[in-house]
Length: 338
Ligand code: 6CS
Image (cartoon, rainbow, N blue to C red):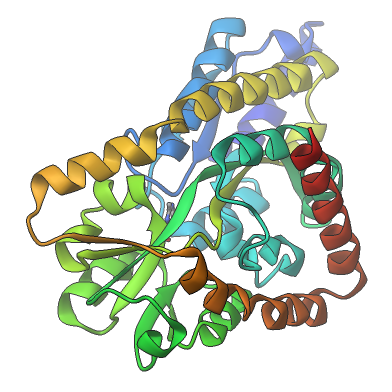
């Protein structure tokens, strides 16, 4: 039975008994895209802890695969089967083109402190994105970075020319394909479940992801050349089904917002130093791994291709995207000026 149905029945019963609906303890469900101990899991469990410590509600967390791929859990959240979902903009691009802003390369700097301040303070993130998600029946709770994107490939790559003919797996959003086309590669959009096998069998030659995920998913075993290109951050978004959220009392809505704040603060602590730790684990487990950190000059050759991706972003997103991009850049300048 859908929990929203359970809620409605419970609420009707409560009203019949003259009780406040807020007094009812519901079980809510939260699905995310990652495995035990990964960044989205850390967020989900901190969210659960706050909800359960401060109310009689219970939160059930579902990890990658338990309810399907990223697209499946989003469908379940939009239809109200799930109350909460965590989906990366990497998979939302087809229905929320503006969210692809995170795939305009070299827009965000590599400096972690600047990026964390940006997510804390950005008007684009904290005030504009909620309206965009709301158009799709979703109450945005938090957008947050998980780690810097690192490319892994079947051999080290230091220039767009060396990407030639390499099939690089990207998440299923059109702008990421533009990025890898601009970088000289052949983009191959695939859901997460097909990545390890694709690398193992040579159907794809590489992929991009944050280091913690390259370690936890064992990607380095089948794609051992790590390339730090400095072109972006993996970002994600935690949200609630909006009908569900709107059906709650003001106190319960506040409980959820406070839980999201607590989970965000905890998760942002968690990611600091995570990439370095994960890289060390990779290096300790494999003699095959190579690490290439592009020089400024090598990065310039990739950065020179960024304007065409920004152009494509504007073409895909129209006025929404133009306004978001302008605000995003202004927010970045503001944090960089501090
Ligand atoms: O590459 C992916 O598809 C996955 N990467 C991360 C860091 N989280 C979830 C996502 O599905």
